[in-house]
Image (cartoon, rainbow, N blue to C red; front, side, top):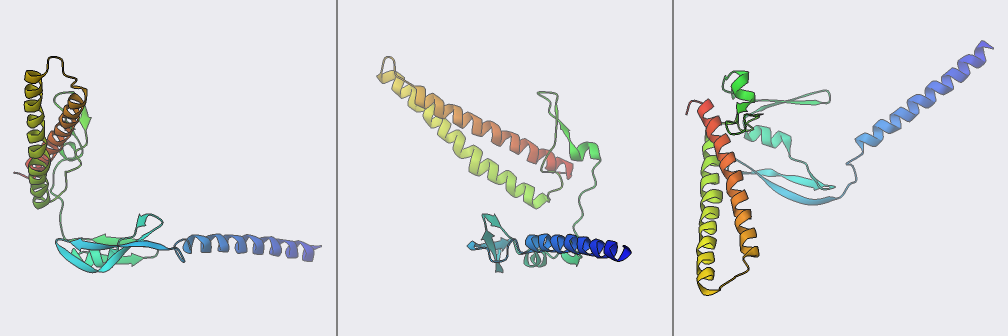
Length: 193
């Protein structure tokens, strides 16, 4: 009787091991044999990397080793974990200032996504928001306002529905850009600027 028990137990254990092994293999093979739909060029700090980033099933797979080497980071593979470390230090600011800020108009606390970003990147972002978003949007909005005044002088009851819709879109873009700029300026202040 004991022999049959051992035999049945062995068969059951073998079935469990065989099934879990094929499930693990299915996970490992998930990208193997999949079609690469595109290859993207990777640029780090203005320098093009020789490695491409393949797009597989709509997901871009960046070359981690090449990127970490280009950034001067140390990459270590420990089991199934990739550890990347840099020599860059995050500015020492208390958790109160780092994780949240007080929105004075609403009294609510929000997270500033720009804390911990380098000063150079923040200054570039600030310039981009000011010159590439705010300035042209405000100019476009002002142009529409001038056109409205011209239309009002020519027609008695003009239909301004489309124009007012476009004005509202400009107002929303300006509002969002000003909030982004406020967060960038707040992060710069935290760095001592």
